[in-house]
Image (tube, rainbow, N blue to C red; front, side, top):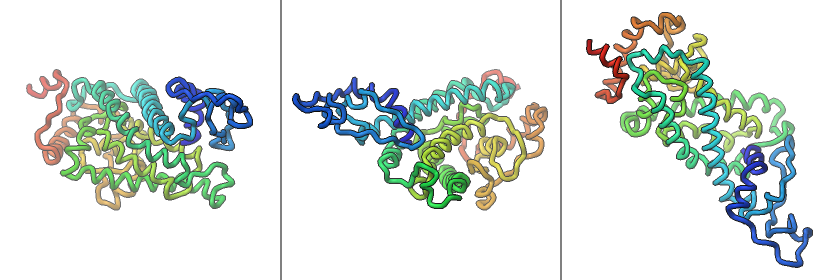
Amino acid sequence: MDVVLEVCDQFLFDYMYQWVLPARPAPSGLTEQTFANGTSMSTWQYKPATEYLHMTPSQAAYGSLWARDNMWRQGVSLFLILWIFGFIVYFVFASLSYLFVFDKKTFEHPKFLKNQIWLEIKQANEAMPIMALCTAPLLVAEVRGYGFLYDTLDEAPWPWWNWFQVPLFLFFTDFGIYWIHRGLHHPWVYKHLHKPHHKWIMPTPFASHAFHPLDGYAQSLPYHIFPFIFPLQKVAYVALFVFINFWTIMIHDGEYVANNPIINGAACHSIHHLAFNYNYGQYFTLWDRIGGSYRAPEQEMFQKEVRMSEEHWKKEVKVMEKIQLEVEGEDDREYEPEIETKKRQ
């Protein structure tokens, strides 16, 4: 994440910190040979975060009491990056998925909530700053060199590692998320942390990040722990971080592309929202199969006209309500008024 931090420092944070915490002027008589810039007391020296990108710092980089290598500045900056960057990725790509992928007929589903999209966005944006605050210390440790991130491809422990690290990352994080997610469904934990995400029986792409903040943080831990255990190339780390967010949106978009026995896609994840205690995995079905929690999507789920029919919905709701009563007890969700009217008739 130091690559992202350097880019943000160059174009935003250097100016922000210079304005908020300006540096003291250098004592008279001291010159550029004494300090990095000749105008402030900063002794920070520029070293690029990656050999693939060099950006000459502006004068503002030396203009704050908190230099770029200050731990507190790094913590604040990474918190803001996680929060703001996370919000942009979430809102832009969830909106695109909603506009071009999500089937609006889902609004007619008996379990679609009143004001659901607004509630999903509201919950996501309440959770994001807290998740960012919890995650920032891990990124500070990573930026300060405590992990096993490397820069150029030549620095990999073995030449083949540059390719192997990606599937290893996916399988490691999938394993970690499976057990964390399954643990969040324990009755002692579920009602306090994970139930807010299961408020959405028929999720939209905006439900992708609509968690209780500690739930979202717990499920993100495998991503951030990985580079403290295994070597990981810096740019690959950033790319995988972006991919994770895209994937999370995709499995909530309700578009069942293919019935793949290996991939835990949107169809598998929709079953998780409907049947609660199945399909805990993030990317693959492997750990659900091993753990006995896999439920394969029915073939009719991939026939759009069938799965979006009222007959299918009635069948779906009947099974869902039975499981929901066992898991949660009385249903405290508020559904669309017109749908409630239909149910009473």
